[in-house]
Length: 273
Image: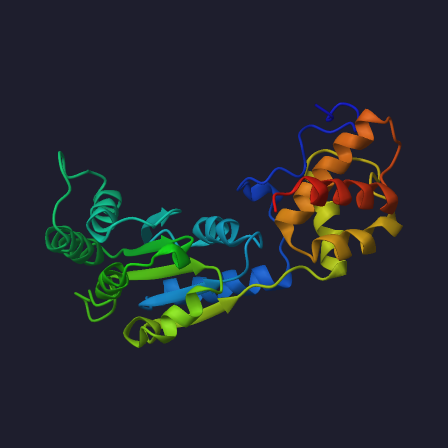
């Protein structure tokens, strides 16, 4: 709606997993490096933890793009909150590229199918990855135990699969109560919000990727943006997107701190209690 007014090719602050808009902050780059190490050295498991809206799903997507060609298949499950039999059946289907057919097989049959595939995959010189996004939603202890069992498969003397848990910090106490799984996480990464300088660079990066060739947000608006969003990427996207919409509607030449504060107050006012 506002792209032509701001002379952009596309909207710069969409909350979508687009590698072109990835901003390589220090925290995000460090996480990718550690996770890549865990996978390419065939570790049993790894953890990527961070609050909502910090870019965990995007990190998993970027990680997948930089892995060695011998890594695969790479299964990325974005909503793992399902009964354990369905979870294992889904993973078996994604790994092998074919579903079971009618009905849901037992956990034992799915795990056996996964084990056979992983052994053959490893014999072919490949290493599989299972990335479970929003892993804090896995409440069934049987599901956590089944996930732990996957890390036991080691047909060639090394694990045949790396299990990557991407989760909000709420998973951490669960792992403390599940030491058999926690001990298999060779790498643990905690991503943090952007600091003010990173927020400035993040906004500039996304605007450039969208085609901006002039400043849209006034420099003095950046401390306000940091204060209002606390450096959380999803909040930055939402606030900047709406500010640009209002700026278009009011025919503003640039967006300043006052405009950001007004939009933020409106968001708070309409938020559900």
